[in-house]
Image (cartoon, rainbow, N blue to C red; front, side, top):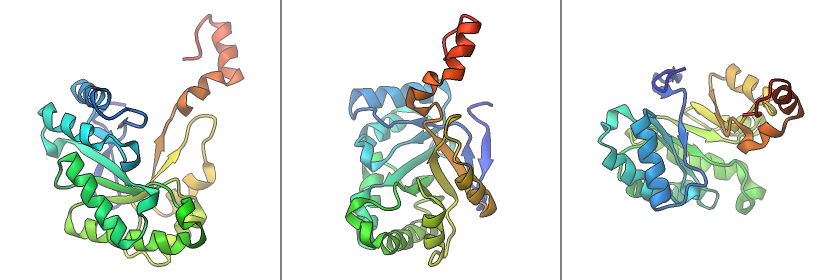
Length: 221
């Protein structure tokens, strides 16, 4: 798998199969140099989020990299406190401004049922999605999707959605493959995108891996 290999979403947009995530990369030099190094190494998909607090540094690195915008795939996400139609529009505008971009390639609802909207998460998601459909229709988001949505969340969203999600980004790794979610996504032509595919390092503690490592005098990595 090369960094330039892609999948094609149901709307025809191509998404690189491998992305560079910026979760836990602190705003400032850390995020800036990490993204710049990733782009210099050949990554073309950069994933950030409003919640990460590093969109400004990510955007500056993208700008300074010299990589043509049309060669990049940039993902960012709507945070929990900004669910709802008007709040989503405002949050998206802030993300574009911080990233110094006219559009993003993929915009996601980060979580389906944050505490602030626990009693009416269906309505909150529907209203956020309505705003996101406008971003998509305007070309400000080339694709729209969700993150951490299970079938019940997707079923509720699809009741009112005019545009079906193109991506569902999930925590998936060899010890947690989320088969029910993947099957649902496949059945609805929604691309499953895995984040933390190494399980934030916990995968290296799996007994079977450590045993194989001992057998061949290797580390689990």
